[in-house]
Amino acid sequence: MEAYMFLIFLLWTDPINTNFRGVAVKGTDVVAYFTQSQVVAGQKQFSVEWQGAKWYFSSAKNKELFTADPEKYAPQFGGYCAWAVSQGYTAGIDPEAWAIVEGKLYLNYSQSVKEKWSADQAALIKAAETNWPQILAK
Image (cartoon, rainbow, N blue to C red; front, side, top):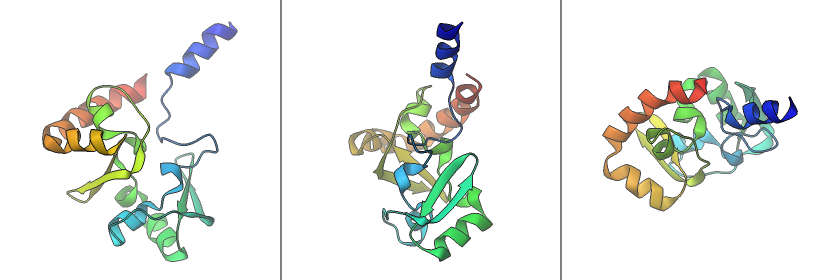
């Protein structure tokens, strides 16, 4: 029975990609991607819990912006690698490998994966949007 439960745990995909401490996007301030167009480390003192994950922000203002409209700022596909989701699985991310497309934040595993994703991003976003519900259902 223990082996069976462990297997289920391995197959489960959390809706939000977090580290072992439950922090989303490796502690990066997701609002700053939109407001400062750069990667900014968040701080524990400006944190909020949303969808079972802790989200860190660099300022009280960014925390307030996120709290008012988390869907606007949260990365697509739960903060998993957008390219991986387009291929039907999940992978971690590098907060530096990001893009905002049509007002939505997308993260990727690495800069090289981001370049591959950027080359055909419209089709890959569509594929990821199709795959995401199936990935969550696993």
